[in-house]
Length: 339
Ligand SMILES: C[S@@+](CC[C@H](N)C(=O)[O-])C[C@H]1O[C@@H](n2cnc3c(N)ncnc32)[C@H](O)[C@@H]1O
Image (cartoon, rainbow, N blue to C red; front, side, top):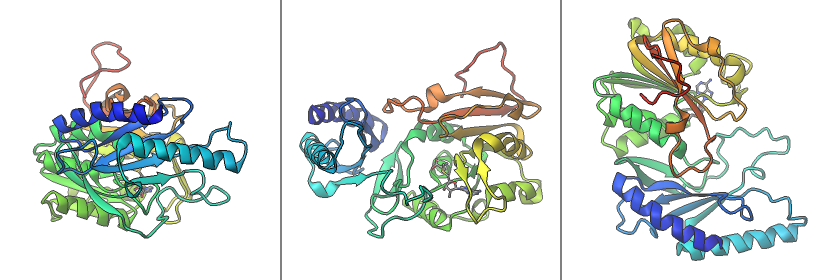
């Protein structure tokens, strides 16, 4: 059943992806309750046969009905067989992840830590831009697929703009901003590893770093306190912070998106150019946007209904708001589609 489902989905999505220069997408997301899995497909960008030439990343989730270890092993074996048959790929092209087991005993492992050193790297494509991913060494591969439409929105409005990418991870938003003709980009993350990865992503697309396009290893919260040099103002800001962090590299003891988003957005708004905009996003499932977080002179509306890609069944994978300087809704609409 699972195998057949995958074959069918792949047929549809490979065609859909090829039309748009997308080689990586969410193939399966708990479609069949009996198989509570998530499968992402990272196709080889140059292939003629996107449906078969690629790598599947499989996220297992425990099933309550599997009482014993033997049950779990039998289930896994069954699933792996169905995936290999359904997609027609060899075992080496299936990469199994398991969120639960990859955490340490007290659940304290940081989501962004390295967990392997195999360096199983490959390049994938999204709307014609190229991204290096790492299939083996981290919990996440280096490209969060759920933000594909938001990245496209940034790319489409970036021409000549000054773009600030906060909590940038591997810089995918910045790569799209560059592809869209951004005049300046500033990309900030506190992880040097991810900023090196960003440099690699730029290189994959024929871009580099210079005075106009900077990569800054810093605690975003601390950087915002000081602000940019020379009274720089940004036309587009991407702000996609973690749900929670108590990293020792931060000045503050901890960051909680729920608790701290009003202050964070207020700080960001100080550096937005007239008519500029902020894309604020979170993966916190229980998040409630505090209307008091909308800075004076800004309008805000939630755009999650269009920022979540059509290949994602989970319509709550993230929530995203557009806050625009000088924008006020004409009438009360919960979600205006002008992003
Ligand atoms: C949710 S991910 C951002 C995803 C990214 N916007 C994207 O779409 O690919 C969080 C990132 O924030 C970084 N990070 C967490 N706390 C930070 C802080 N205080 N300052 C700078 N970066 C931080 C992590 O290193 C990680 O790369």
